[in-house]
Length: 178
Image (cartoon, rainbow, N blue to C red; front, side, top):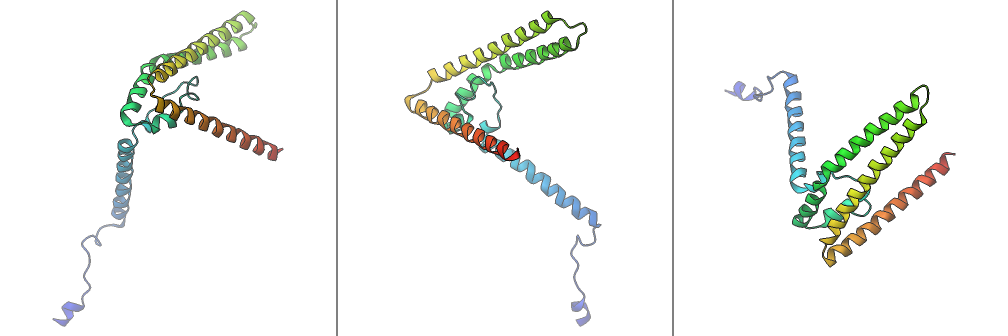
């Protein structure tokens, strides 16, 4: 009986091959990543949504939207999303025109009229994109309460300040490299 007590007990998975332990750890890591992604989507849904348009990102900083209550944020994001297809088409058109411009530059013999037409088309699309962003900005501002207007004003000031700080840092870094 004493001999039986001295025999070391082995755990049930100690007989498994070593690579199975690696698989278990890898599986746990993947599950944790998936859980974290789902959690981020649940707790910060608007931060994961994309909205674009250079014409209004300085006037409607993302931080402003994230500071709003969820129902108001949803209302404004829906306004922004209503123009998503217009922006998408404008960007696609701008890419096409840019490629047309590049092809015109390489064409031999050089055709100045073709280059100028591509530049004019690009300018027209850019203006349309800015106008669309301006309209969205106006639509959002019309719906703001006085408190939300104050919050937006502060967020715009903060964004401008951050941009100026980045520019100063970049200029300082450029000065150090020379």
